Image (cartoon, rainbow, N blue to C red; front, side, top):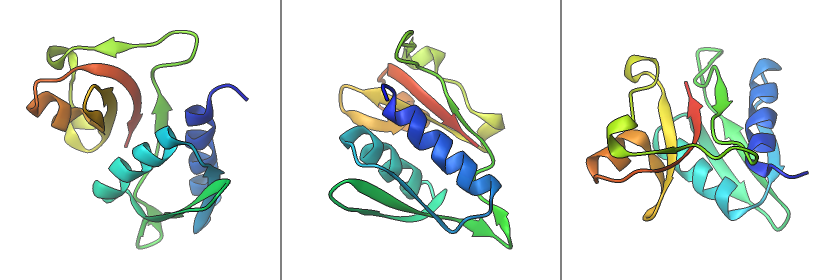
Length: 125
């Protein structure tokens, strides 16, 4: 498997469609930093890091999932980079974009606030 971030997003998407409470994803530094940002935004309840995997507890509002869609933007065959001017709100502010900057992984709005650009990893809404 080459793209571990895409695998994580697909596993979370599939678990949400099946209304699962938690899902296991592969433990990498990038996956952990993305999950940290998603947790800070309140889109997942919690995640627990083990040796080989990360257990993600999904968040639901009255049986409806907080996350409805995850979309990978930058792929391993074609990296997508954005400047601070190119960062736009996702779903009119209801979603988040995740950007890998020189100061770490953060949301698009946080990167724009710090005048940073970087690799556009994914969109979550």
